[in-house]
Image 1 (cartoon, rainbow, N blue to C red):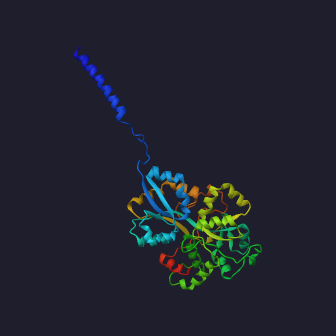
Image 2: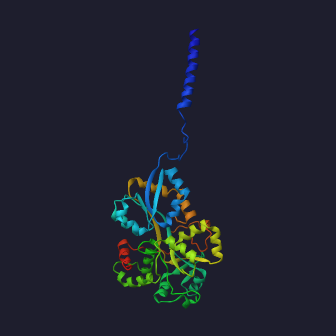
Image 3: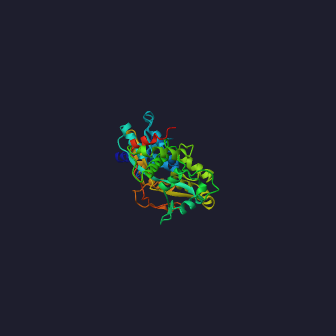
Length: 368
């Protein structure tokens, strides 16, 4: 056999061998060219969240975004915001996600946390019913705003409570009992705690409560909260009971704006029927308070949650599906995604929250 033929056959065999090796050993990267390839590994982050965020964290799309874009698997447990300041508990978790700025202040004093981030916010609101709101409008306590939202004057409402007025005294003869405002437990839940600050502000003629001014309002606040009896431990539980039992049980409650936005989005037909029959109404306290949801990483690996929660897709999902406002304070929000009457595009009348030490002192009024 000629030398040239041998070389030619050898080259052909070499090409075949290389081709076989490429097909059996090397495999192309399926994520080549993908800007956000799925994460091949995942870290598990264990944390405490408020009941109002439980549905969001359980959302399959939320969980998928966490895992595929950021390599996170979330293992969360429901807790009242105020209960998150238990230093003994914190060592068992990677992060906490309270709905209270004052709780974040306390956490900073308890731990060596390296940075926090405000993620969502929702205003504190009242929930009532059309037949209850109507006489309050006639008294000037409730007023309709140009955007068709309703505001309720805190001071005037609480004066009715302090004066031991009954619902029959304002023309609601079919409703039994004294005028009260139902809240969640102020010692466990942020909404109840925040309403104590609103009540203190109203009783102090609009001045932010301080430790020095607490003695002047403490007895009145204790009376206001005692009148409504047993307190639910979470805002979500109270809102669900409000919808289930109607005006016969809960005439006015305190909750979050996000409560009704989430319910209406998840139960459109039920919400439509309620609007036509029982006619629930949302009213903005004048002034109100922001419930600010701040992520608090308790270790370095949990800091990835800041990027995840501020992701554009997460922020969009949080507003459009769960009603958490995500924009800058004062900016208008697209409210057309919700079929909720009386929803305000912007929240303008907002009071300042007292510092944590003052709120702790104020809670001493609740000696149960």
